[in-house]
Length: 279
Length: 279
Image (cartoon, rainbow over all chains, first blue to last red; front, side, top):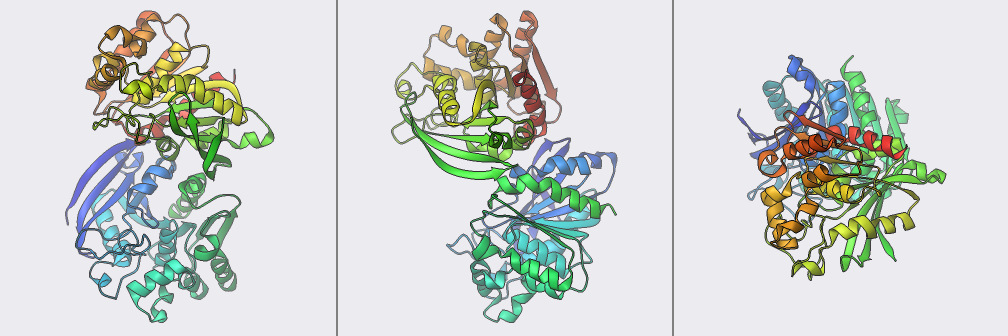
């Protein structure tokens, strides 16, 4: 396993770095970003927050716009941000912004032409943490968070692998993709028309039938243009209520779907994860 | 005077907004961004920090990447970020990233073809504050800061108008443009070959001969790729020492020219300006 360093910028006493590597899972070169807080220079192994971005994003959006590095430095937490899909000229794509490159939806595609490269679920759950934990001074304490499509990814991946994550959170997640246009389009393409396969990747369904709980925090803007049609936090809240799942859900009046919202509340998310990672 | 609202996002309890307007000074439509902190909703008039961005930037880079809105909300300070040049199909341009659109250098061009639109000095000093102070709940207490080309702009504009600004600061400014490739290229194009006209826009020269002082803070990354050839903080430091100018200059080992550096120290800059704005 070889990873190639692409950039390195000092930030808040630690380092933001980008790497590329040949992914076995995705069958193409992939890029990720990592923030290593100043504590690692003392030889300390720090816990890792995985961040999954939304539609059209890359490894860069969160690191540049969230303001999270300040708190990660204070709390002694690494952050890892993968790209949102496989990439490249020989990777299947679509003209829409909500399918194909930039829109991997954190599932393993079973349908052609997507099944050759689109295995973002396996990449995030297995290959990426193996690389991170082999190459960097981090512990195996993991948390996971994300935004929109990446919020869907964070919640579903954590609930399908509760032994691998101490806590999960999301901003503006697609909470019930089997009933939302983005989810229906992506799941039809990647997983096929049999909706039985979709439910395993629906956060509301997983929260309703979960038997192992991990602490969960979700924040949603009340003036988000996608709230009613695509995001549906009421479905997640209903599932949590039925199953007594430990979900902290907040709707923030006036906030939209942008990083101006995420940056306003990212400190609370990092403190939430730090509390559970340091137990 | 009409300004048109283009976007509005709630952030840290306040609002980030973008506007366009027809600039009389620049003879073209211009865009700016403003952050209004939560204190304005109490009817409070807040002071304003003007931020001037660097080469290739627009009104967006600082607002999205600096992490400054958090402190602006806490301190009760508005931030205004103009674009870095006039824009449009009928505005003169150059193939280089360091001349023409995105590279106005905060001077009033006297040379054709630039003199038709490139009057960023007058725009920042006069037209923009008039608009801001007429349209928004802000006081006439002003501070100014910027990065790289915008650091040059902030320092020179403040020293040429010390009665208009309470404090000035810069990240990685072009401190001595008359002796740097970026400055020589831009000043030759905009101001002509007579170097006597250049010195009025050279921060080191202005600091050496200033008779009215305003508090100044400059931060520079020690691993900035542009440090030796383009930025030359040693020239500014020498000028401050000769003239006893109140300059706080710090070189930060390992930091580069990016927003990963700016975001690491922006809190200190906002606190510096707040201290002087609230006197």
